Length: 404
Image (cartoon, rainbow, N blue to C red; front, side, top):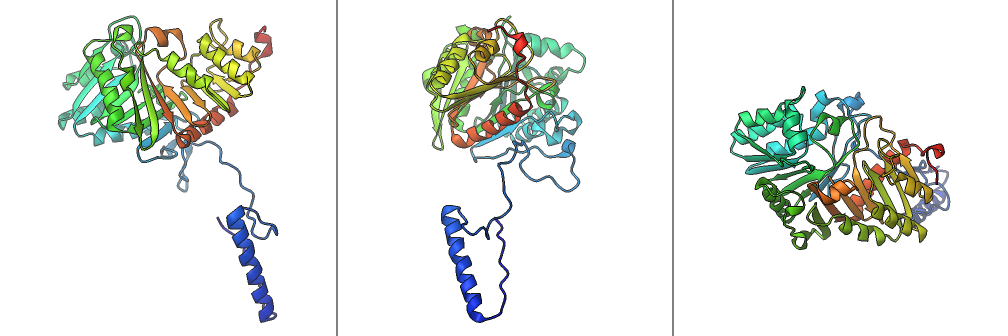
């Protein structure tokens, strides 16, 4: 932090000494208390920065389309990324996006890349996976039959076909429910997950998040789930190992759950019901009544609860926007002309609940989904900043739309 230096005249030596002593004493007070009784050390007023997915200052002459996306903070064993569809929206500039960060991890993989991801239409990612396969990396992918392999026949797709032609096997769930996961496991050491589909829309048009965990213990949990699906076990018939899916990484408790077998909603609701100060959420789909009621109940005790819904679908009969709005909780509808695609809850500025899991009956009872629960205030602070950014461009529900 810079300080203004008082100009010291040299009218006499004693005045100089007295001035220096005063500045020294005030400096000590400022360092210890943060207070400046005189005002002479005070710099220009500062405020917390607006949320940004790009925390490093842009180079001279940079424009929003060529800024490099970087994790706002890396804790060494974790990284967090957010899409920025207002500024990072040119898929031709993929090197400067979350796609570029994913490709860096593909290029760094030495032994294995195991993917469970719902959709796919990014040719540079396909090319990176093919290169990994050619250098001896075990590359395998589980996807959804309808939105994965069948969609691969549509215009603008064909990336799964590219993989197959180069010897990379892709399997699908072949059922009506969704294989809706979005997770990648690198070398049995690193997990990439969150709400982001590996698509142009997911990275360059929607609001999404990615969290990367560097932990062999967490990777082993995801590997078990990947193996289940690879061997054809999907949905509620899959075996649950929920009692083996919690660990501590560098002092941070981490829990991983998979639907439909792990009764995920009943893992989330107790955390919400235990909120002491705040609840924040960003929701693409929020139709679960029990979760909404838990938020309403906590708000009734003084907990500060608020959230943003994706606008599309939020005014339907099953959506919980009406219930929360009529209970006087501060709720808004997303301002992104595309989609708010996050599935995110932050509790007490410490718990982050994220993943592919929408707050819906299908996600709970039939789809294949994953949820990551992290108890870490530093990570939570980044997600809180992202919440504020999205909240600030969201809009209040139209009272005429709702009858309470």
